[in-house]
Image (cartoon, rainbow, N blue to C red; front, side):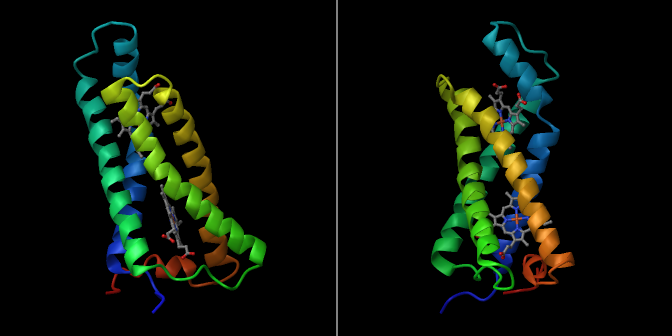
Length: 165
Ligand code: HEM
Ligand code: HEM
């Protein structure tokens, strides 16, 4: 049977990943300083090192939660995108979700490839990827708010119904 709502786990995963990504965007200075020092062959400031490790741990947590989320999507399914709007908007919603899914893997994996393996170009892919992620999430958020406040659909409510089984 196709799913008609998001499960509690899918909703918690959606918002936990969103919060962790927000943390990454707000607290990346330590990682940037340590990374710059490393590339210049200099010693990193002691105060930056815990922040750099936090960036790694939080980023890897996003990767683990994203894998769990994709697995749930494949096994349990998700409700169909809202039928209220124009087919072009439904396509935009699906395309946006696809790109976000791709980026919540590409961004932490490219970061890990730069940090653990020193893969050339991985740092650049990471920085470009997080920029695209930022803009696409802004578009996604605007879409959700338009759905809720202008089109009066239940799309945002179903992603907030934490009581679902
Ligand atoms: C979804 C997860 C992640 C997000 C949203 C994220 C976000 C960011 C942001 C905003 C920066 C600052 C870039 C800049 O403006 O210069 C950055 C830098 C960096 N991050 Fe992440 N990050 C994530 C995961 C990771 C992971 C898992 C690792 C390593 C295991 C990592 C390693 C790095 C490195 C090495 C840099 C410095 C790259 C450079 O400046 O060239 N990141 N990240
Ligand atoms: C970094 C932040 C975010 C990420 C990575 C993210 C990611 C996603 C993804 C991948 C989906 C598709 C779920 C699926 O079908 O499997 C989704 C759905 C959704 N997101 Fe987000 N999201 C973020 C922030 C937000 C914010 C801030 C809002 C609201 C203001 C929001 C509202 C929604 C809604 C309402 C849905 C359900 C759409 C539908 O059922 O058609 N998201 N999100």
